[in-house]
Image (tube, rainbow, N blue to C red; front, side, top):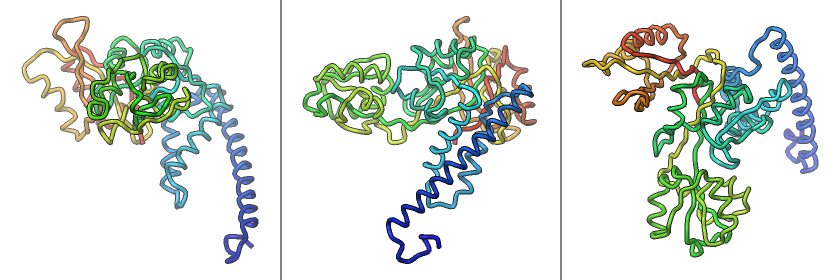
Length: 362
């Protein structure tokens, strides 16, 4: 008889039931791994790409939509992130470069996307991440592109002008900033270190709670935590992970000014991704300088009901007073309406480049 069906089941009986369930889970994980290895063998024989981001999204959507509970969907997705990561590592080692150092929000985003079984490599700059992937030393690269409070990361957009890498995924990371120090006491803080973006995202809190305390820009939140680990009179604005890594105490948690503070990251690769059915496409273009050109460049999408989620302009560094536009739209470049709209847009452009079509972040 199932212990859960017994009105007076003992703790020992319930624990034994849990052990049996755990044994079945382990058996099923190994069975899944064997099937994955067979899929990898077939892909290798057919020269197919071993990692397909769209397939991952389909797995998540199917599991989350069919989950009856009470096990929460967020936890289910986290577990399957690691299951998929471990299975991919069995097929082939997957090296992923990211804007380092460790314990930055870029590191957190990379772990969220690729799990702990991937080989995660921190690099010192956004150009270094692109170069690592372009040279084939890493399969993927992860770089920040915009924050919901402070806007775009211009260095990332500028890299796409010369690079031939494709965007293969996007990551949305909810960002929480903690004030960390060695003592954990507010009254000990004489200086605050952090990256310029977190400092800007916590500006109001700092003005209200630490008025007159100098703030110092450093290369990353992890660098700030490392500096503060040797200075009992300083504090760092960084992630909880950075605090754990550098043995810091939390003075205050979640000090960001905006409650809904998200950073969007892009995953870049040398190969394009297949259509998943729920995609986003990013394009870059420069338009001819003519009256009404901005209206004309948007009209092909409006006429077909294609939703544009973002438009951003950047100065074109090779020509003064000319601009490059970056456009995000819902749909895959291979969708008929999107393909025709892009062809029409191309007619009024000096150049147009599809940066990638990729599954929308869940």
